[in-house]
Length: 370
Image 1 (cartoon, rainbow, N blue to C red):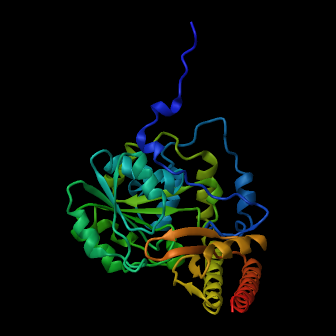
Image 2 (cartoon, rainbow, N blue to C red; image 1 turned 90 degrees about the vertical axis):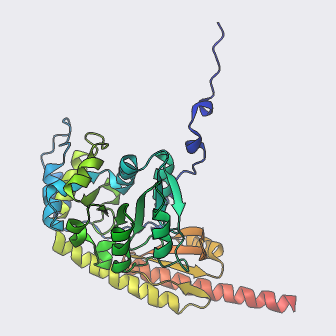
Image 3 (cartoon, rainbow, N blue to C red; image 1 turned 180 degrees about the vertical axis):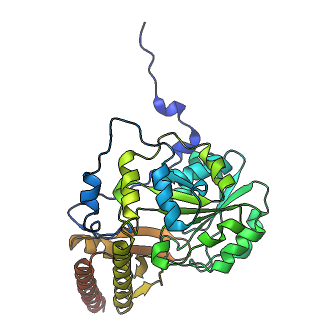
């Protein structure tokens, strides 16, 4: 019998076929200022302590991550029962929508914002309701509350500070959504250590509040994929029902525990990155024909007159920034992460050089056309 030819694409869910994969450039030869990472090495002693730990890699990790949750509980002042750890924020977003979303249900997001919310929604058959930011920067709280009136709406996701704009939304507006929406409100605080603002203290008041945190940004552990959720015990227990067993590996669990023991050293790094971000912001505001948006995170959204050309010119000079493409209302923009001080100085030299070169080019074109 002749083998039956099979085309795998004939069996793929339509939602998957419609997805555009989340892709990032891997260019190790460049100075990476594109991924909002902490560029500093781990605190002195942490790496040695981790590698000298007697970890039994031939055994499964603690599926409940009890020791890591104890450390997080001490750090956040939230009981262990109100903590769930995950394989990075991406997994946790998907677990939230597996729990509260699904077919016939909807999640409300505020574009422009983190792209994984929409991807996870599609993967879980959850409808996406978009309420764009006012002026591309501010929450449209009234419209989000109106959208939440729909019985299909089950989840509202607020990224605060927001990625990619760096905007810190007013606390009272988020609390209004918690009080009046009647839905699960997820507040993504991936950059809270930089903004130094958080709703953790409100968890005891709102059973519908879930806070998403990560070790990837301020704790410099982007390569290990480690995040956690905070909420009331009953809410976290519901999400835990869909969590895969052993979802966080032994190495990452131990690294997270150790990182929380080096808080003072990490705080020094955070303060340095905040100062560097401010220097970059001030420097960019002095460049002609560049719009720079205020930020409370460790990155800056800015809009040159020709973002694609600027991204190309920066790459030629060895600097990788994130080309955000066309954002709602704001248009084409670039996003820059604060790097090491010497890298930031080099970046600003490159920016000034590109600005001069493009100005000369424009002038020459004007003379020619005249």
